[in-house]
Length: 223
Length: 223
DNA sequence: CATGAGTTTTGGTCAAGCCAATTTTGCCGA
DNA sequence: TCGGCAAAATTGGCTTGACCAAAACTCATG
Picture 1 (cartoon, rainbow over the protein chains, first blue to last red):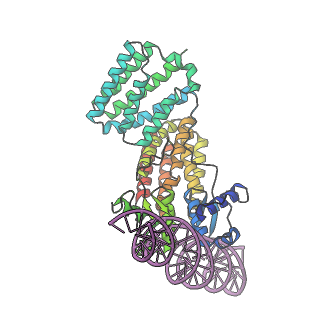
Picture 2 (cartoon, each protein chain N blue to C red; picture 1 turned 30 degrees about the horizontal axis):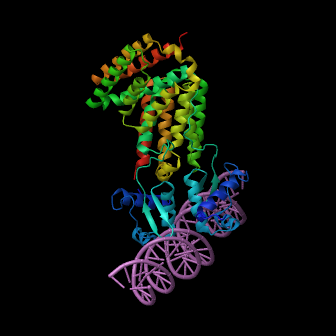
Picture 3 (tube, chains in turn red, brown, purple, blue; picture 1 turned 90 degrees about the horizontal axis):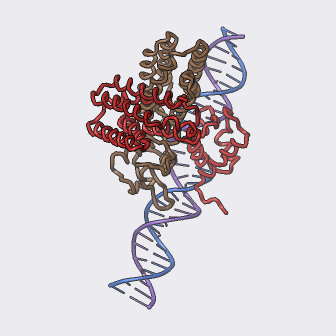
């Protein structure tokens, strides 16, 4: 089976293998372009194309007049977050981040978003009175606020942190949190946040969000 | 201000502009390599290097014997994989989160951490004077601050956001940021942050961090 | 021993050409 | 007229060779 890919791709892989094999540690200098091209049996332009690909993905660094250097390969730029940490850390992280985000959000809060948040809280109240756990509404509330900051990265981070609470690791302790009283308290705090947003008061919103998540963390950890 | 980046990076940006300007819609075919090279005033090998960069970041597709085609500008990139967002969003997210974290960090800042930060900035200055890119020091500085908040989740988020700048998708524009002048400015801003931390002044630290990341974003996006 | 000018090394770019895959053209035959 | 297929034109893939500019190195000099 011959490799039908373009030569620069094959060459880039071969250089990656050289580095992975340990011939060149991070920080080390690769052979000069002319020499490396001859060693790999390709022309210099083709090797240069491969080097550009490797430079883009962060495998190497090219310094003009100096040489080609191996970078730290220990950071595969993976987005896979293993967030299985302690509940207190999780809630503290959420308090810090969501409090900061809501300051941004309060500035650009639209009437449509306000209305959506009201609807979410109404559904949440409905869930509680009917004995259902309003987890989805809770999630929608926090996510809607994060999204109103108009930054997909921030929204994604908030989503990941929220969902972390429902990971297998957290599931064991979760029961404590899900009493009707706890949810009623959470709903009250949500209304306080919404009131601050309706008033377009960033600092009040920040305080309300921080209060909510701190209280939420305490409820979660109570025995 | 002359553009000192490598020619392939400048050329890749110019082709991106052609596409962004609407001259070539998704699915359209760009002029042939020989023609496009002449049109842009560069040699064909240099244009080819630029095209490889654009192919890697998903802007175009190169079909042997057929032509160069514009791909969909929207990169959903499938099942929740890539975080490839706009640089401005990334830097905004960092500004929001790291500014919030440093408020926590300033409260519990130890003398040891202060000393470590000083050492990092010294190494950063050394890198700059010797013409090296102090990316590792930059990373260490921001990560050390995040870690001093004593929350592994927050530290991990800061790390992921930092490394996102060096992901393949961001790499094409990376050259803008990496001039000596830019790094010198970044170093000055880092010193301002450190000064606020030494004074145990959370609000000053927050302001300095926000200023730094906002300026960093502007430098990164400058044409 | 420090220093700085000249030399060497190394990456950056260009030019021209040939090969291979694809597309287009247009001729031929049914 | 229409379909099909082969030659020609188009287009990307790759090589050789050369010259320029930045960085690193050498070594004589003060």
